[in-house]
Image (cartoon, rainbow, N blue to C red; front, side, top):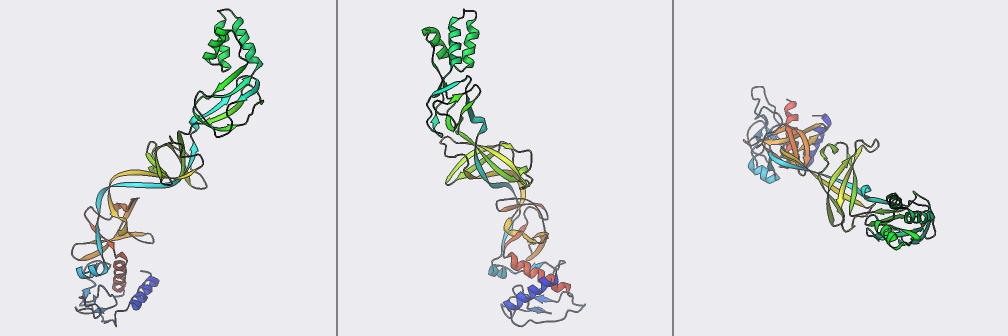
Length: 379
């Protein structure tokens, strides 16, 4: 023990106060004749007796081979509220909770392009953000190229008609419109473009009278029935995440269930995180792009040997607990821990299934253990 820590413990005992200590020297012929009060370590004696403060029987400091092992009677355990927990094999569920940004599912974006040169004659979509159903008209275009193609289709013989029909289809005329043209022999002045899917108009940079050229994108639709939730997971945790794993995304009081669909192959150099993407069903469009939510991933680690987290103590680089040996003694045991899940730690080394460990009043037990070790070291 470091001198500063020992001085701190002695100072603490002076302020807690137990009356005047009974100090005696221990001779080489009586190595186990140094006694101390379990509740008031400042009270010591060279022979058995009772504590003048609490009346408890004094216990020998050297009753075990370990100078840090302490003995606390059942009465004292009850008085200080000492409880024990069990080291056991149990199924561990690790939960990762990270912020997630709601994004548009890029696989459900639809670009509306024109295939001919012309002018927008009528725009059926009035505002950005408007919802349209699949098959609804978006805009109509006047095009001289379209007029020429229709006239050619009507003038060709039966052998050339399939290629002429194909040309009209490439200009986005529907089969119904082409059939009507063939039946009525009346050329359509305009070409109407229809929604390729149901969704919201998220981009619209045109108006009636706008001149368009072949290949120009005039509208963008987004289907929000499914969205992405992007989260940044720390590099030490990302190995636990698997594609296909179930995830819960919480926004306010509502929870949405989805699955992990993508894990980035690289680490962000600045944040040391990895991008994890989740697909979330969003039938009512309650999750909107650029919202922030909380993603919770529950990872089943399987059955592992585990210890309650309240039983674990840390001192610098050391991790230890106090094990009840079954004869009234509590001995410190150094641990090697693995993953943490809820209120449990995986035990890799130091304990076995069935071991009982201290889960409350750890600090009092630890203080007495360290004081005992310090007094033993002074002899």
